[in-house]
Image (cartoon, rainbow, N blue to C red; front, side):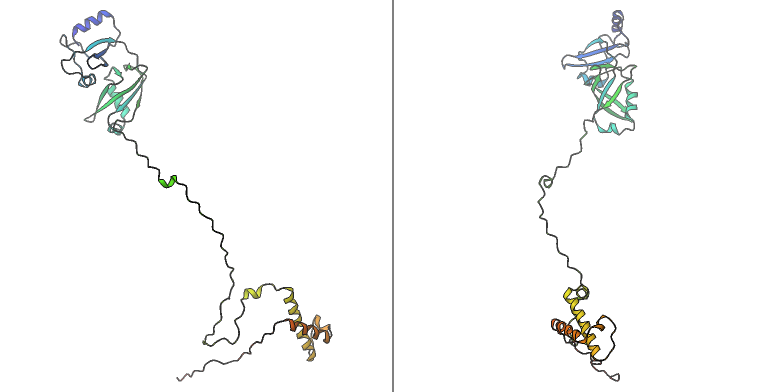
Length: 279
């Protein structure tokens, strides 16, 4: 600013540090700044290029300068233009170093942060307790908004199958599992000849408990055998030995009539084919 501005401000007894409000009436843009030196030519002020961009000013344009008193800021919300700024190892530490060269912040302004030979532009989204605050010798909380080029990951579209109710599955009746019966197959001879006797019943059927009638038949068969043995003159030890032969024969006759008659073929030894060792 020119030296005449300093003389005028000194006579007004303004507060220090000196802060100013800049207004571009043609573009209706307002911003705030401090002063570096009072050495400019009369009628001229020099602004940083990034501030001229915020004010939409060109060289030689008219700007209104007014002394302002701003409260100290307690909260600032910033929004980077690109995601690259968030890739920096410690962006808050870089901001603290960069903001030391700024005296005040205004909502709607864009500041430039140089780092590692690259320029990062950041928007001032929100400030508290007022839209324009002083950041000189103050503890200010800094928060970040998502960058301008940030895109949220797309959520997977819900599948049509999930919206539809699954078809009701009819419950099948439980299947009956057949019981295992050992040795229930058909018998075959090794020499290929047909069987002389009928196939034996499965052992599982033979092992089942018999009814009372079957038990009576076994008892009757025993009595019949005992009577036959008694008639042939053999000694018999047991309960049936005390029975008279006539009663035993009657019981045997009844049981023999009830029981099925099965003729068992006699065993014939050496009935296979003959082979000679001489050939």
